[in-house]
Length: 146
Image (cartoon, rainbow, N blue to C red):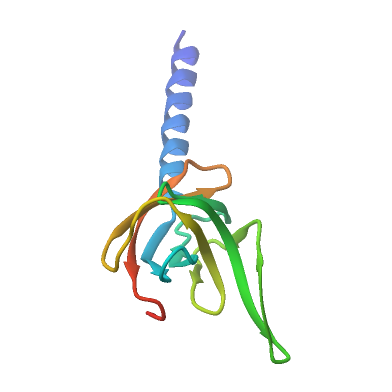
C-alpha cells in the first residue's frame, strides 16, 4: 500500500512539473504593430518573438477577425531584384529572438472586414505548432513606421 501511495505522489509531482514547463513555454511577443496602407490595400504585421523555453517554437500562421486572410511572408532583395513570397512556418530557437520587420519576414493582412485607422488595436491569433493559439494585440501605425 505504501509503494502504491508513493507512486501516486510521484506521478502527481511529475504531472505538476510537466504542466509548469508547458506554461513556461509560451513565447513573449513585443512591439506588435500593423502598418496599414490606404483603402483595401494589404497591411503588414511586425513584431518580435522571444522563445523563453528550452525547446524550439514553430510559428505556423496567424489570423484576425479584422481581415479575411492573413499569411506569413518574407521579402528579399537579391542582385537588385526585390521579391516576396509566402512561408509556411518560422522556427525560433530556444532562448532566441526572431523579428518580423520591414524588408524581411512579416504578416500580410489582406481584405479588411472592418474600418481601421492609425492608433486602433487589432486582435491577432498567432498559431504555434503544438501550442494553443496566442492572442496578441497589434497597434495600427502609419505606413513606413518602424
